[in-house]
Length: 448
Ligand SMILES: [Zn+2]
Ligand SMILES: [Zn+2]
Ligand SMILES: [Zn+2]
Ligand SMILES: [Zn+2]
Ligand SMILES: [Zn+2]
Ligand SMILES: [Zn+2]
Ligand SMILES: [Zn+2]
Image 1 (tube, rainbow, N blue to C red):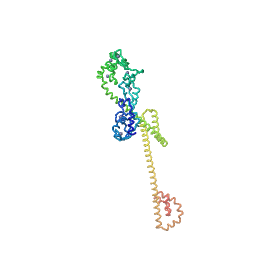
Image 2 (tube, rainbow, N blue to C red):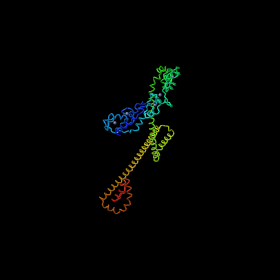
Image 3 (cartoon, protein in one colour):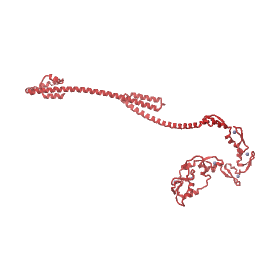
Image 4 (tube, rainbow, N blue to C red):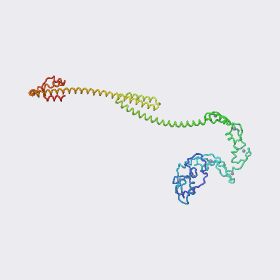
């Protein structure tokens, strides 16, 4: 709505409230954000501007009439000076509820009502329920006011005076019952503690101050069991050691409470960590079991590990009260131990393999060396035979021709020659000097 509508609404809604909500005695504390910047009270019928600032409807109405330049359509927000043309009556429900829930004293506390009620109920309390609201006397000629609870069902005036027979005092009829019960000076009561007789109307006050009432030491909460007359309590408290260390004990108490709170927090965190540890542990165990199964299929050497593993398992099931952390450490240590064993076994196997391999290589070398020696010998014998063959051919050409004729018989003795030449170069020279064809020696070389 615009400003004119708002002012019209404000003028119309200006109904008479029984209670001024801004003059209440606030019992509970309230957030400063619930305070109207204009009247500095919790909002009464709040309205909202375009800039989101909130004011009481009534406060804003008076602010507009004061600050608006004659008949213009906008006015500056009382908080931020933003020019404003529109006003909204829809404010957050939460804000209204929070304002209505602030505890206040009944405004008729001066009449004797000591009720404490939420601010939202004050109007209806005063209007309908409060017995201390002053009503005009049913007798219209009287003109006095009477409290609502004193109104008689028969609606007669209670303002006439009547005389108290005991104290000879004139008391208004509406107060007579109370006078008769308590206020009459002739009524007396005897204090049980000091034995004095006191007017009944001051009896309550006397009980609070009677010097003979036995009361506990101020340090009774710290263990002082002394109970003395009120008159002597000051003397005792001067000497009582517990009174002097009272503040210290108080400080210790608060410290203990703080520590307890911290402990509880830490305990909760510890529980969370323990859960995490347990999860980790179970995951580790699972993976270890899986790998353990693989290993047992491959090698029998892991039997020891698995035995240790099952030993740990039985340990856990037998004593579950043991802390998780020690179990985990134990498990990790055993895992480490088994791994170390495996590594040492592997290194042993490697050394073994190394030795075997070098042995084989050495044997092989020896064999090859021998073969080489044989080959060398054969080569030497062949060389000597070739030399032997060359000599007769150079100086004795005719004999070589004769040799070619009986080459067939020479073929039969070739195997015998091979065995003798393999025995060494000396064997070749010792062997029978038979004429040979060059092609034979060549074939013999390739065979070796
Ligand atoms: Zn206000
Ligand atoms: Zn504003
Ligand atoms: Zn009341
Ligand atoms: Zn009257
Ligand atoms: Zn009296
Ligand atoms: Zn007394
Ligand atoms: Zn004491």
